[in-house]
Every structure is written in structure tokens, then in C-alpha cells.
Length: 252
Ligand SMILES: *Cc1c(COP(=O)(O)O)cnc(C)c1O
Image (cartoon, rainbow, N blue to C red):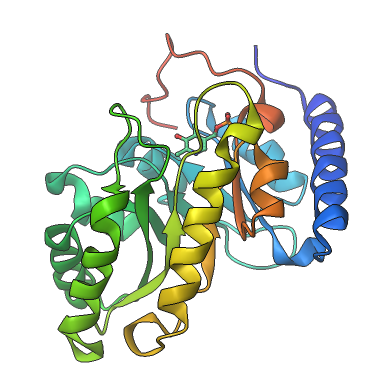
């Protein structure tokens, strides 16, 4: 069962209390952490409720589901346009659709994908924000760049030069913490991500906009905020448990 608007409001208040407390401990302002509402496996009505509660940014794992919910432009409560973040791995043949529906893709992990996105965005006349996913949790099941190849990958991007990617903005790094059920276990990989992001942000040039760290989910957002996250991707704490037996793929 999906949450009612009132239930979602309560969950949002509880989540905001967690975020605020973590920001306080970290000596950061609440404004420095963007909340991305991960609506995957939840229907369009849940998105409507979220928008009514002030959501501006949504995360979807699968391109098709993102298209169903976010192809039509919609307005957030603050008057801005609702933004769609693609946060799951995107197959090469879906990159074009992803680039069209998304304002930001968090899960890019190859030069081939970067090259293809530049072409697609040039054709669309669109500037797209992208983040590089690093497999900092070092688990085989997770996608993203291997920690050992991350730096050479970023060097390769840098070597191509600013002129190579006029339609892409490299915004930073993304990772998924360790899936141990213990938030503290992810601290090291979050810190690794921050160090890598800061090192490349300091270079400027291609990395002039490399100021974002997408890390922290329902289970480990406090640790992520303490380690410098600027975008937390939260699903369960806002929308409740996902029902994986009911994929959202009916037209809305
Ligand atoms: C599903 C998902 C989330 C949200 O996870 P919750 O634990 O439900 O908050 C965040 N990031 C990615 C990449 C996901 O796939």
C-alpha cells in the first residue's frame, strides 16, 4: 500500500529531523544538502503527493519508469521546474532516452557513455549534468568505476579538455554505501569519494562545476552528510517499502 499524503507528510518530518540533526553535527547548513526523492517502484500519485509536500528533485533507477513519470514537465511548489535524476545504471542503448528525460544522470561510469551523451545532448541542444559513479563500496554486484581506476578515468576526461564536452556539465561523484545494515561501515567510502571529488574540483577547467557528492540513502544518510554529501537519495524513508512485484510500467 502506498502512503497517504498525511503519512508521507509525517515521514518527511521525521526525515527532515534526521537531516537537520546530521547537518548540525557536521556544522553544515540544511541548504547545503539536496533531498532527492527516490520514487522508483512508486506510482505517479506518490509523485504528486511528494510535489504537494514541496519535493523538487526525484530519482529514478530505470529510464522507462523515469519517462513515464517525468516526461511531462511539471512545476514544483516553489515555482521551479521539477527535476528528474537518473540514478541507476543506464545501458548504452538507453542513454539517449536518459539524456532526454533527465536533468542529471548520477550513474555514468565509462568514456563511451560520456561521448555518447555529448552527441545526444548536442543534437537536443541541451546541457546535461552528470555525475560519475564510483564503486567505493567495492562490492561485485554494484556498478560504477572501480576505485583503482577512478582517478585515471578522471584524468582521461581532463585530458580531453573543456572544448570536448560543451553540452555536459561534470558535477561530481556518486556512490552507494556498503550494504551491511551498519551505516558507519560506509564512512570510509564516503570519505574516499569526498577526497577524490575535492582533488578534481580544485583543478578547475573541465571540473569547474565538480562540486557535488551524491551519497547517502535511507540507511546511511547521516554518515553521508557528515562526510560531505550534497545530494542524498532517499526512497524508503519517504515513500515506504517498495513492492518489487509491481513494476510501474503502465502509462500514467
Ligand atoms: C533505490 C536507490 C536509492 C534509495 O534507497 P532507499 O534505501 O530506499 O532510500 C538510492 N540510490 C540508488 C542508486 C538507488 O537505486
